[in-house]
Image (cartoon, rainbow, N blue to C red; front, top):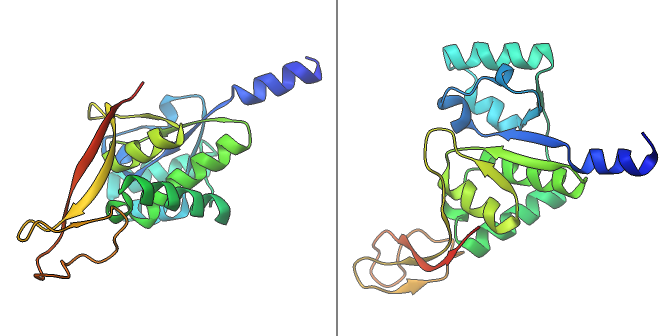
Length: 184
């Protein structure tokens, strides 16, 4: 293989990033040949789940599954996109790490694929141009942007509004989609 073929092969290299929901759905790291990764927080979320814990540790010890922490710039980019879509309020730190790691791999010229049933992760991934695969659900079919609102007084807040309570009446805020766009 010459240098150009090597670069093309590396760009086509698929890597799978696994979310907690992939393990909950019964994903077996030994069932696929691609490189697979989880983040530190995903490992922490899965530790203690008897069957899952055994499968997870066996996969890590055998080298089938790697634990990697994303770089800060990709964490910030993932958070920024999640704020734009309005999903930031429902994403955990582990979810942001999964998205950031996928962005990092994409920047490195790899083809990341996130295995998740989490709709918020799927929605943000879709906005970032990152592939995802649902395991036990149908997955997100359209891209969503959200708005936060008060169900009591109907005051609207931007999707990235950090307070969870309405400033006017004190009711807990909810969210709803403001725009639907067909996704490919």
